[in-house]
Structures are given as structure tokens and as C-alpha cells.
Length: 254
Image (cartoon, rainbow, N blue to C red; front, side, top):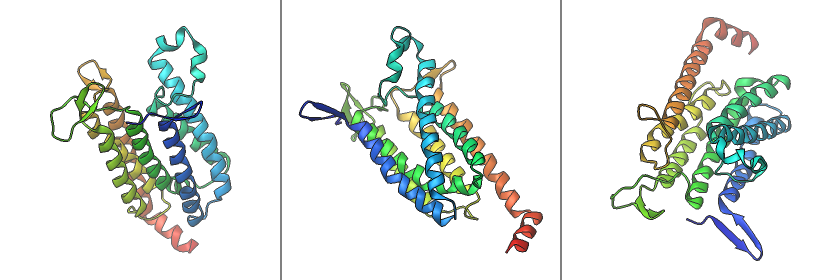
């Protein structure tokens, strides 16, 4: 693990650098996909910026609500640029709601806009895995398997490497634009469903899970709910696209 890079008097957190690199790589991919789907890429870039900002604020507030004791004595620490004190689920929900609101206000086609974001989002998740490798966060449970890594005074599952490999696999799948028709929002929903399923799987190897009463892992429950919602809307939109009225309207338009 390589959490920090020292450059003279400066200390650079490598996880934050990896996340910034992920945004740098993902945004051009989103813009190219938006142009291919005939969406105004500059407008979409502004929408994504505000959604990311809202998601970041939501992730920090979500973490503060989950661990209020950390901030009760020093509320100004909410402003600290620490990527480990974020709630990914809260940030995702707030960011997605903000995205939908701005897409409607800018009168962008919601389903095509979501599909244009899908490959960039999938690529960004690869860099999230790399950030965890660098920082040592999202660490695995103790194990005696031959490929265990030494971390935090224990031999553990290399869960960060599992995460990165699965994210790369999901990105390669999403890049092929498997669900048809394109621009129908199905690629985005598939992205969310696949990453939710991967979180359910990966959580079994994690050593930092938050447990609910009954032994349920918080992240698994949330991921299962998100995956179910994604699959429901995939089925709904696929049925909508295959309905006779939709096919008729398409033929008239074409």
C-alpha cells in the first residue's frame, strides 16, 4: 500500500490522486458517448459537475450522520478533504437525485443521458479500486489463503484487488453496450446492477463491514435494494420499448 507521496514539504494523498485521475479519464469518455448519442456534451458536463458536488456533500453528511461522535466536538472537520470519511451510498443517492433534477431542468433526454454516463461511471469505479489499493481502505478479512496480503498486522484477503479486477470486468462489459436499444437507459441500469451485485459478493471478503442486528451486513442490504430497483426499471423500460405503441411511434418518427 502507498497512501502518501512526499514531494519536499508537501504530502499528497495517493487515494485522492487516483480518484482525480479517475475523473480525468471518465469525463472525456462520457463526453464522447454523449456526442455519439446526440446529447449536448457541454450541458451534460455542467450537469455532471453539479451532481458530483452534491454527491460529495451528501457523502460527507451521510458519514457524519452515521458517525456523529466524530464531528460533534469539532464540526469544522466536516470540511476536511478526507476521502475515507465519506458514505458512498449516501453520495450516490444524492448525486443521482441531483443529476435527474438538472437533466429535467436542462431538458435533456433522461434515458440517453444516463446511458452516456454509464461507461465513464464504470471506468471511474476501476480507479476507486485503485484508490483502495493505495490507501489500504476497504481491507479484507483475516485469512490463511496462499494469496493473502499482509495489512494492518494481519494476513488478509486482497479485497481491494478483487474490487479492482471486478470493476475492470464490468467496465469491459459496459463498453460493449450490451443492452439494446442504445440510449434507452438500459446500459446505465446494467452498470448499477452489476456494481451492486459485485458489492454483495465483495462484502463477504471485507474486514471492515458494518453489521446490523441479526448479522446482516449494511452494505449488502443496501446493494441488494439498489440492484433490485435497477433490475425492476430495466424490465420496465425493456417492456416499454417493445410495446406496440412504442414501435409504432418509432416507425412514424423514422
